[in-house]
Length: 323
Length: 266
Ligand SMILES: Cc1cc2nc3c(=O)[nH]c(=O)nc-3n(C[C@H](O)[C@H](O)[C@H](O)COP(=O)(O)OP(=O)(O)OC[C@H]3O[C@@H](n4cnc5c(N)ncnc54)[C@H](O)[C@@H]3O)c2cc1C
Image 1 (spheres, rainbow over the protein chains, first blue to last red):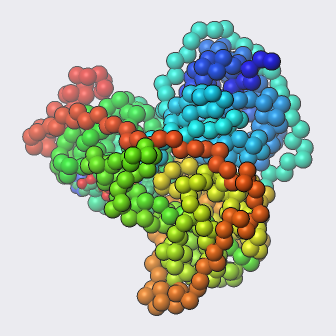
Image 2 (cartoon, helix red, strand yellow):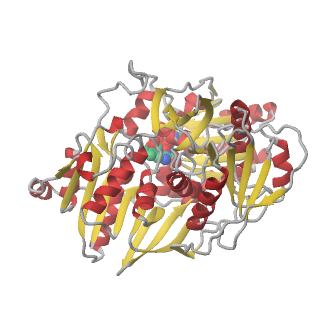
Image 3 (cartoon, rainbow over the protein chains, first blue to last red):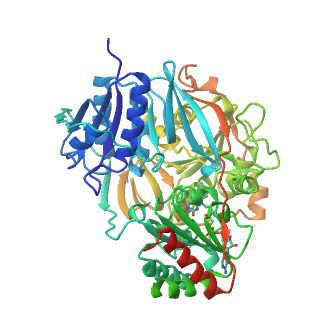
């Protein structure tokens, strides 16, 4: 009998012709499949994203499956779980890997329960150990890493930016439809008003300027927006600003907000708590402005300015606009 | 109507972070456990907000019995706090948490909810601040065949359905879920209240019901962990910060110059 496959599962169309995080998880899946000498399969729920076939080839996917059904809309997690459970029972994968989105956080545990396997979130890397797997995950908001051993058939979610994907070469492969019967599934959650966000996204941004509690008051947040604009970036925030209603939750950078990977991350009046850094430590260059020379943010920063944000930021805006 | 809130005891995440920042977070000889005995144990922050979510429904006029449920070896402090806030029923499932994984925990919680009279609504925090896994509430819903709505920041209860504002990374989403449902609470819900001194004294009379896993007629296999913690370590942070010196205009100028020289800025 040939080896049971490693399955990468993606949902959503994404913004660049691929489901969110697809390449990162394909990268992890390819390496795991090689280590297990197992085939790699990729299953996509919903309409086929434009670049799926080509990308499947680049990561050595042997079968690209598409499950399309009118019931598989975004956020229809009852249908998603049912479809993937049927798929999982048919393919009997060794492991199912997903990119960790809010939606995946609801689907992955339920899928694991239906397939009788383990579930782990916040994965960073994975390797086989006998019939089992060893997965390294983040804990305590990033203050520690844990290594878990999980048994067969697990569903494992990987955090954004866990790896930098390296496509290989290989020609595109065609998607094969996989039919599931979802006629018996009734979605239990009714969306009355969907979230819609059309602005530029923190997770795509090249430059982010974020403000924290050190700004002192909501009015001062406009300095962050001005600096972001002057640098050609977008504005983010630490959690307390969201909690206090200065900005809405789409601005939050961190463990429970946006996980970003800009070229430049400017942190103003942010202490650098692990849960915040979980959303920006992958930035290429971090700049910190903080009154406290001992602030943790300076442990992560490439350039540091010790001083009052309200004095420094207007000068940064001026210098950036002059450039 | 019965509302159940599940709560977990965790190490104070701010204290853990402070130790980490100071480079003093240490793992014990077993290679798994944080050794700092000085770190306070407290109720997971999101779980406190889950209790707050239930109390706000009560403030809005809903009538229900509030049951607060915890799995752990010594949840006394947590449950006392819950009673002082207005929980009428306290249940403690006594088991060493180190022997469990999230799936076993969810099995225990789901079985106990069912055995003790079920629930129209189960509130949980969106995730625990120690393992950050956030799978227990979803699994409780799966086991009890309830719907699950995550990251709620505002909840309205109308007879047998909930209208919920979810704080998603895309902004607010409004959904409706029929009861019974599991709802997870996110920080955007806002500050949880503190009990008054007199409520604390009165709460001493509410005694927790103690349950052991054996009483829940779950097989050993059902609560055997599938996720085994083998090792925990503290990741290294590379610190090579170059501090810029001078007055505000000077440091701003220097910074922009350096970022441009590096090619980070055009
Ligand atoms: C489970 C969990 C999940 C979390 N998720 C997130 C998350 O996703 N994102 C997130 O951001 N946080 C998150 N947090 C919260 C996190 O732990 C911190 O509390 C938070 O990031 C702190 O925000 P802050 O740095 O803005 O505020 P503070 O920690 O209060 O820091 C303010 C900083 O500003 C500096 N300062 C003060 N005045 C000035 C001034 N005039 N000029 C310059 N500097 C000044 C101070 O020196 C200080 O360093 C989470 C916490 C938990 C427990």
